[in-house]
Image 1 (cartoon, rainbow, N blue to C red):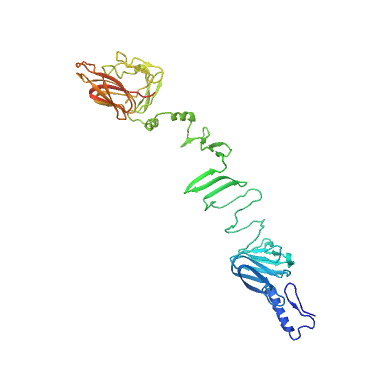
Image 2 (cartoon, rainbow, N blue to C red):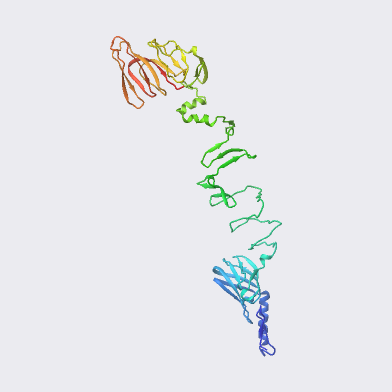
Length: 441
């Protein structure tokens, strides 16, 4: 009878009457094979991307060892083919390389053992369709102190870990809410500089680092950023067009509510006021400050920062022809200064304007006068015996004009009257004058 071999281990079964004189050698080899199959550890040096793990009948070979220690420097994932494909095998594998080791036997399933990891695998020896199974992945709730590679872990009782390193891109929760509960702070550290908030895969909000500036923006086109109180009451909204819209009665500065309406504030759009003029509303009490407000009872003025009302009957004259005092005959109703005239008797009439306690008019004797801040009406006369007299008007832009008011009588004073635009001046020989500022009211 001719010798045969076991299917899985390749142990030689000596036929009756065979191997006379050499039977002992074959038996010793069989014992070596059995030793390998039960306790053998072999170092396998891998290179390239393929390797064949062979079990040879009747000969001690690599495929007979129980523990496989993989080493070497494979150039990529190394596919280890177990041969023959009809031998059932059980291996303890330690992958000491820097590449994945893939174990295969036929067209069935394969097992990947990650670099630096270990696994217990078996091959079913089903021939061309043979499959390899990872027994390690089937062990429930395995408690190990070292690192491991698992296709999945079910831990319904919870998991206690130190740091977690994830080489994938997602943490998925099949249902319900996810609570992250920490004793300290939650630090989101994104080296890409962006934190995204999405719903069902659609990005809604984007917080981005821009040269250490923080950019917060909605990502869905046409949508707003809305600020609400806990009960859902809207407080403010940044609209898609860039408008910052604050709900009525919800805007305050240092705890003081701003009660002006948008329409009231928009009046400033057409106001031709300077910063200095606006500062009058902030308690400016400097000499010459004034606020142009008028009512039917008289003229409201700014007296060193205190608002006062002067009845119409108490308003005094500021100019009469040929004098520095007199009486205002009337305060007309209406708006503006239209209708304010110097009568033939030299009396000044005003129409629904107001005057400041200081700075609204000036008088004296000089050779030059400048209309500062506001247009001025100025009336004056040359010094006694002025004769033929010509005045020069200089505009704010530097251009000049002549104002010839000579009356041809060298024995009397030559008088003049004109309106100087703001910034313009009038000059000439010595003259006495009265100037009134034309303040809008």
